[in-house]
Structure formats: C-alpha cells, structure tokens
Length: 60
Image (cartoon, rainbow, N blue to C red):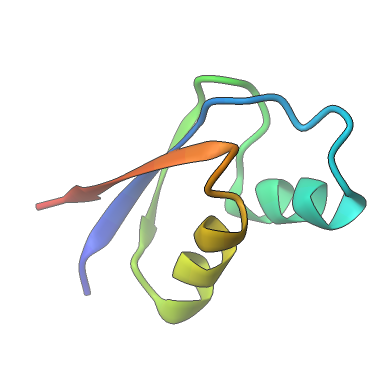
C-alpha cells in the first residue's frame, strides 16, 4: 500500500470531542507535528473527516 504523510495545521480547540479523538488516534498532538500512515481505507476516512485541520501528502 501507499503511505501518506499527515500534518496537523490547525488547533483542536473548540472542536467536537469526536474530532479530537480522531486526531489522537492518528497520533497528532501538536500543531506542525507530522506522522506517516499506510493509506488504508480507515485512515483515509479519518483524514477525510479532519480535512480542515490537517494536510495530507502522498509518499512515493
């Protein structure tokens, strides 16, 4: 599978608890933090829910 690099670009303050938990499950805590994940359907679904808080790029 392909890999993706997810970067947190905005704060989770004043966001619903569900979005905060998704950020936590992706391993994102601080703004500017970068994590790499396999591009599985579950991870892509989580990233899609947070597209206003994170940026995503594909790793080749």
